Length: 164
Image 1 (tube, helix red, strand yellow):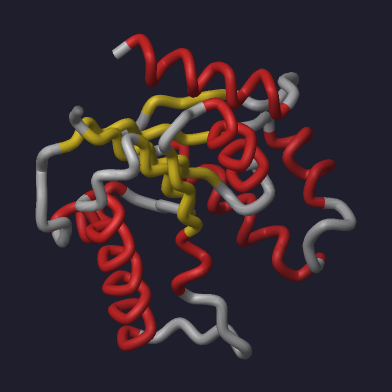
Image 2 (cartoon, rainbow, N blue to C red; image 1 turned 180 degrees about the vertical axis):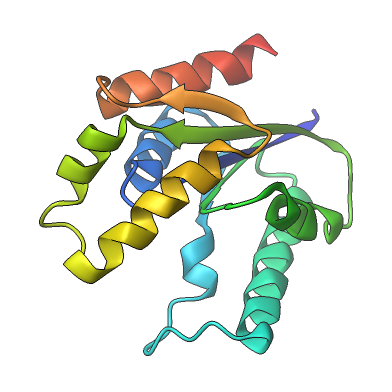
């Protein structure tokens, strides 16, 4: 059995967490990891040191789950604003014996702004919108969530994973 590493990328608020929760229910022998868990701090400080620490935490978790025989599917959600960030994480993995699926959840900007209303501090909304455009430029398979329910998005990802 070859492992399947499924990366779900997207801007804050586009639906990564909710989609992964639903997708995990569809995939037997799966585990879901959220990159934010490796970096939840108060205050949230972005320095070269904290970025390296978060990358090391992420790759430590991914390596452990990729090497555990109990799991066939490893779901990983986070905001990958560039292909360079993907490569930093993927290059630190100790095995290449897995199938890689890279998805980016996208959304029409007007719908995305409506989703953010009340969910995010107003001062953070411009950063979220910029993230939407950055994530869309990554070399990933795009899934537009604009007019889809979480169940529909999870089923699309599930079908694409099973198809390959």
